[in-house]
Image (cartoon, rainbow, N blue to C red; front, side):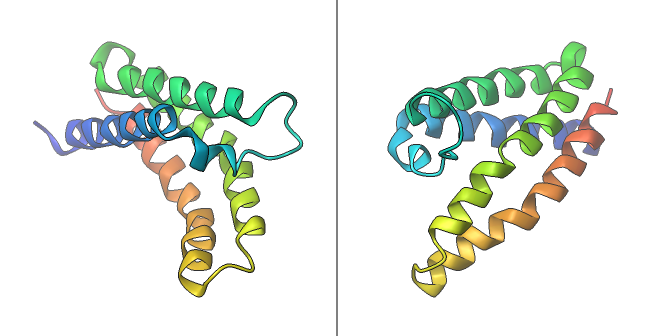
Length: 122
């Protein structure tokens, strides 16, 4: 397996794991859904989990990898408001929890870069 294909498999694994945790443990994610979104938080938690699983499948398959990588980049941008909500909500938590919440914010940029790199993988 080439390095680039390995990156695609790793990205698909990350997305699939995130998707499964959204569906299996939704309460954690419900709390970070931006309150400005219409409807119940659980809808957005499940919708993002399903989207992550669909994008993971697209990234894993060579025939859909380009579109899957582009979709993954868009997904990482789309979930940024949830990470911002988490950082705002956790600003008075323990230093360790704040570090987790604040640390998620700058991680979005390399995730987007990684997804775009995978989109160029054959």
